[in-house]
Image (cartoon, rainbow, N blue to C red; front, side, top):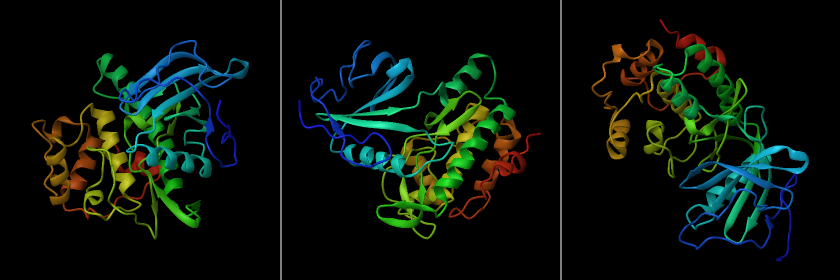
Length: 307
């Protein structure tokens, strides 16, 4: 067994290293099975999700408490983003931000221990559609997004210490339904791998971002503290109507955001919920694309009042 150091808890440090079998390098995912104990004291129960990043498992921790464990292959492409995300969650705390309680590295696999959510807002949308609804009911959705708005306000505020600098904000840059996790009747924002420090209310526009939720200014190198608000508006439209407000492949959406010529597709605006029509029309009608609306819980319920 290699030398072990621990970063679990409030003090930042090196990642805990254990010897453990990893699948062949080109697979990029630890070969976890139910019943495994990848970290002493944590037994895997069932897989909760799988994606390009790796896997998320439900696990039973000491005393039988259920937690989530994320397995990520630290490829050259993902390493810096994942380690940066750990730095963020160590330094920034808020009731509506997902809590991580420990991190371990096993060869080239990073394991992150997190609180276990019920499901994501993307999952909740699929439930609503299966029930014959167009999207998540308005009052329910506004409750969840009020929590997310509070988290985004806190992240964007110039009160954090990151990269040795104080009084800076943080832009999330990856706000979408899959990164909003539900706990009972509340919501928390997760996944900080694409976040960037805000200096004087602005951050560099270069770097990864999630189409089709990214704000136009992200592609023009002029991202600001309002860019996350744009992503929240697109997220709202998707979850309320079951459809994105704009259509097209990645390149068409990117060029359309820069030029201000995004298409809403064949579905007319009149067929969408009134609160989604308001958001779409605000962004299509000559609104300055370098800024958004003030983001507060009362803004969500007020400016997007559904008819």
